[in-house]
Image (cartoon, rainbow, N blue to C red; front, side, top):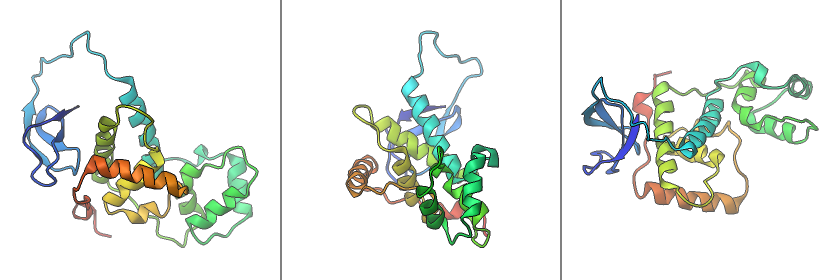
Length: 214
């Protein structure tokens, strides 16, 4: 798939950045709305001298890790045994914040803050852990690609804050409640200003219409 700037803006959010999959539809990187696109030839091939940007691949790969952790797409073996032993010995827990505070007090090599949603789902069985659909996952990735395309120079925005910002724009504050978040007020303000500038005055994308009723 490739991302392009198309002259005709999205009918929903007025963005001009689209993802072309070559199957007759272009997907808006801002809100996920589809529009008619081009159909790639079966004989089409990349030019041999064309090099895919390594930076794009690396950023997307790192963001996927945080996104998949928020979706709890991991196994128990991704958390060290000593971390599990410590957490189980200091329970029970009220919520994700309680689990996080306990981890901060621990003398552990790996505290696995990025696995907080998964840890909370195991350690707080009394809570209903939020889930995300495949459509929501793809829309989160499209929104991140838009950020990736916009940031060409200077330091990149924190991946952790990107995840929080995207989830909030998608109307998934329930997922945000269970993830590790940046606490520094100064950094949060600076990151928000940069991302607000990228998305402009567009209305947040609420994905409720795509979610399966509980």
